[in-house]
View (cartoon, rainbow, N blue to C red):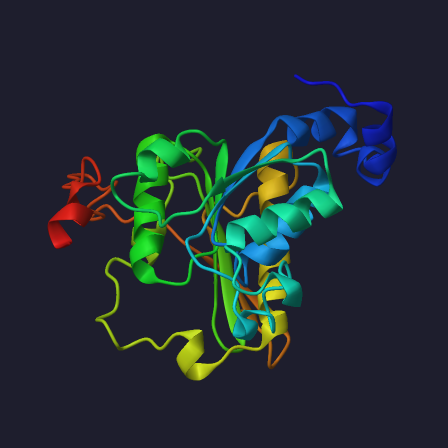
Length: 271
């Protein structure tokens, strides 16, 4: 495990004096490799806070460029970065915050052909994607790669977040749930509008993305109670949080009693 320099100890001392984190926890963060799916509304606070926290390696996968309409919520990017690839803009901003972070750009879309190869190189994944196809792909790839996944999504005035360790079992010997246990099938195309159609309050991404970054840090340092088996729902208009229990679905085609998905070929068959 890499040791901390004197400059790093000074930088992270507010972490280090926390008895739950300490030097060992900070070293775990330094040695961690986190893949963030999307450098947009959720990815922005996730990447900013993980970089500030001292996560040693941050991978960013996004094939989009920075546009003016992004800046209302995607606080990772600046006006002078318009038309730049989001991964390039994100890398520059992260290094402004913390030059100790190794940033790996994946300027591409996650696909069934590259998902396992990319995800397998990291310790944990934070999914901030904005479409169902990618969410199912990330979920399934993390299951096969046996990687923990901190998932979040937002709506116009709401959001939800959970953690999946789907390749593991709970204390009772039952498999942990995954995304398909909550949402067995994606809604039909066109039935769920995206933020470009219905809008989104920009600060919602900040609230939920910061929670997502916190859960990633907790998983790396093994502190607090994990969100595995629990879904947190945030209602911004009423400023309310609700936590609901989620359980394994034995009919899940990915991790159920008789799984029909043994690799990612089911995504290729749909293409």
